[in-house]
Each structure stands twice: as C-alpha cells, then as structure tokens.
Amino acid sequence: MRLWSRELWRLAWLAALGASVGWLLGAAGLGLAVGLAVCLFYHLRQLRALYQWLTLHPHDEPPAAQGMWGEMFDRLYRYQKSQRITQNRLRATLARIQESSEAMRDSVVMLDRHGDLEWWNSAATNMLGLQTAHDRGQHITNLLRDPSFISYFNACDYSEPLTLRSPIDERCILQYQITLYGDDERLVMARDITRLHRLEQMRRDFVANVSHELRTPLTVLSGYLETYSDLAEQLPPRLGKGIHQMQEQTQRMQNLVNDLLLLSRLEIDQGGKDHHPLLMAPLLQSVCNDALALSHQRHSITVAVESDARLLGSEQEIRSAVSNLAFNAVRYTPPGSHITLRWKALPDGGGCIDVEDNGEGIDPVHIPRLTERFYRVDKGRSTATGGTGLGLAIVKHVLLRHDAQLQIESHPDKGAVFRCVFPASRFLLSETYA
Image 1 (cartoon, one colour):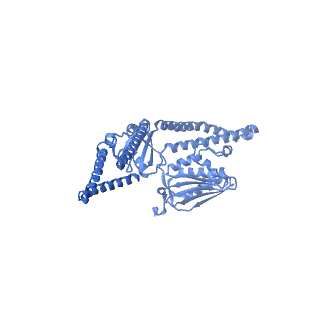
Image 2 (cartoon, rainbow, N blue to C red):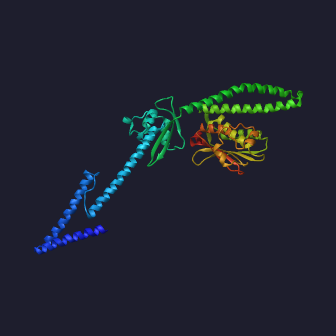
Image 3 (cartoon, helix red, strand yellow):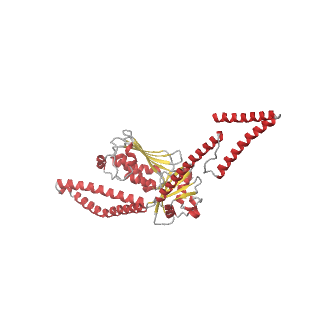
C-alpha cells in the first residue's frame, strides 16, 4: 500500500512539474501532457524489461528497478525461485519412484482414465511383453487379450486378484491386481506366482495321492474289524470294547479320506459338465431326512421352499454342500434346537439356500476363518462330534464352482445363518420352461 501511494505521489509530482514548466512557458496543458508522457515512458520501459526477463532470461537475476517495479521484480523472482525448487523436488521424487518401481520384481503398469498405457517398469516388459516404442498409448486390452482379463478389467470390481498365465510364456503364472486412483486412473500390478502355484499343485497332488493310498488299507482294516465285531459275543468283554472303538476311529478316518478326496477333486476338476436345472424342494427334503437320521430325532428340522425357481448346478455337489451345512447344524447345536433349510429368491434376481438354526451361535471373530481346512471354533467339543473339519471348505469350493458365495451371520446365543448366495444366471424362473 505504501508503494502504491508512493507511485501516485510520483505521478502527481511529474504532472505538477510538467504543468508548472508549461505554465511558465505559457502552455500549461502541453507541460502536463509531457509530464504524463514521461511517466508513461518510464512504466513502458519497465514493462519491456519485465517481458524480456521472463521470455529471454527467466533464470537470470531480475532487472534493477526502484519503487513498485523493483518490489514486483523481487516478488516474481522469489516466487519463480520457490517454484523451481518445488519442481526440482517433485522431479527428484518422481525419479525415486521410477527407480524404485524399476527395482521391483513385480510388473507395474500405469493407465489413464481411458485404460491407455502411460508408463510401465522393466518387469512389465519381461512379464507382459510391453514395448516402449510401440505400446505407449495403446489400450491395455489390445495387448492383454485373455477374455478373463478383459472381463476382470471391465467389471471394475478389483477386490480379488486374477490369476492367469503370462501372455508371452505359458509356463509363467501371473497374479493381476488392479487399483483405482486419481481421476478413474488405474494401476495394474502383476506378480509372478509360478513357484507358489507349483507348490500348491504339489500339495494338492500329495493330499490326493496319500488319501487315495490310505483308502485300501482302511477298507481292509474296516472289513476285518466288522468280521471281529460279529464274533464279539465270543470275545472277552475287554477285547470287544477295543474292537468297537477301533471301528469308530476307522470310520472316522474313512470319512476324513473321503472328504480329502472330494476336496481335491473340487480343486482340480473345473466342473460344469453335469450342471442342469435342479428342483430344490425334493433335494432339500432329502437332505432334511438325512439330517434327521443323524440327529436321531433330537432336533426339529423343517424345509421352507419360498420360490419355484430352479437352480442351475450339479446335483451331487449342491447336495454335498447343503448336507455339510445341515449336518454341522445338527452336530453343533444342542438337542431340541430348530433347524430350517430354506430356498428363496433375492431382490437382485438371484437366489439363496439358507441353513438357519437357533443354537448357541458363533463369535463373529471366528467367522472369517470358518472355511479354512481343519479350523475349529471349539477344539475340544468339535473333536467329539465326529466331524472332519473339512465341511465348510468343501462348501466354499462347491459354491465357487457355481459362481456363488457363502455368507455367515451369527452371534453368541442368537443362532446362526449359513447362506449360499447364487447369481441371477443360476436362478432359473419357471417361465424358462413354459
């Protein structure tokens, strides 16, 4: 404000001086005009110096000036210097980010809001075959053309990673994870999980082979124990009790081997060959009868079919999944509990199978781990029930093969609901068969 006042006083002084000199010469107006012209010339000269500095020598020291122009030159120079420092800091940060990305073994690909390639590291060149000279600006799906990746990219649901083979090396298994950031821009990361995939395959083969090899000796052992049990009256009471216990444990081992073989088949076999529309009422009623037999009529079990729609799937696998849920409800609820098997439609066009009980319930802290193999909420009690600890893992894999998911709702002393949610593509309305 002080500088502005000083400039006004300077303008007034030059105007007054010009007018005074002009008045002495008998031309006051001309003197005033000359004074104002001198002031205008000064400002134009400073403006020209500013233009030349900013356009021709922006990195040099600012021109020397006094008053308001000198202050403005200094302010512009300080602002320019701070911007230059900020830009250098940002360049250094970007350089470090690029260097760290280049050092990563995982592929990193940056896409704009349209899905076009902007930048990628050298690992992406080795894993995905991206070439800097040709591929920059190309859409990602023009280069990664696997239908599974295209569906995953367009779905915009990146909560789970996608596992595919490398587009340039069939022996390499990659896991893709896409992250949204900024203005609908995407960051695609690809990790080489070939070693983990092979280890997982080895584990599956080992479990399947061991389970298969155990089947024969267990069958032989079970046969001899059954023969000896028929002669229990002729054996000493102590020996008869031991044979009975061996039969129980042998049967338990056979159930475990059968569940392991089923789980291995579900993991290895892609399925889909025996999928057809299923009538849910007789299927649930059959499971209900089996559950009542397991319960020895100590539980109340009902079937509620609230939709006449059919489910597209494998009858054997769906029966196995629902049976595991129903049998668990029988095993882990006290006598007198009520269990409901329900088939109903959902607002989104899909359907679900509910297995609901009013038993003791489950602490929510255990729910995320219930589908893990051999995970037990109550290790002491669960051992006594005769379960294998693989039931919910089998349910999870069956549902994955049917594009479905398992939802669990439970709280202590408030019962539990195990819900198998199927998409609309699996929920076939009766009009389909009209």
